[in-house]
Length: 241
Image (cartoon, rainbow, N blue to C red):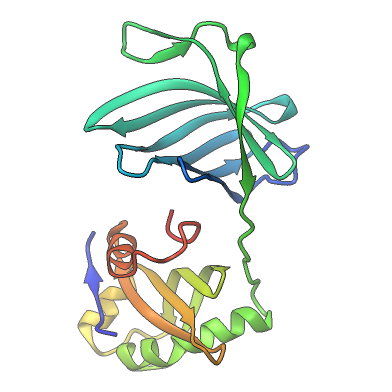
């Protein structure tokens, strides 16, 4: 692979500190939500896709309250127009329930719920389980080995990886950092500069079940993610939401 250098739930719930993925797919529409929960702060991404029609993609931000209730602001784009509205969702076991209610527009343009207590939970999304191999596990070791050869060759010395791994249905994504194993900067100036940036790698198992690295890149922002998705649009959405 050609190298790429780019510049680019509450304590009572067991979900705290995780990124959760939920999906509802029917012939008529597909709704996907990813949520990151730190303490009672919630951030996420939501997409709504309709075949042969305009859908939406946007962000979620708000708070997690008692009973798994999420009070969020949903900023999204539809047909080229930016919209913002208040939403109430609920985490219930391995499902995410999306609430609907009458909206009224405020002076700032935000569509707020007229009566939050009247919200009805009309759509249920099932959780999509994503594997996160831990340091020291055989599963993670196989992924590290698949990255080690090509990246060590690029840097000019043996490297070590620190970061997170997500795996789903024969695909894997590593996001983190790379450092020389001996702690000394490489002689190559480009490689030395790259090691100060974030590293991302996309892998897939071959027919024999061995991990192969399809893409890798160093980036200071989301550029590597965007390039990986552009090159491999078939990657599962839970890896590159």
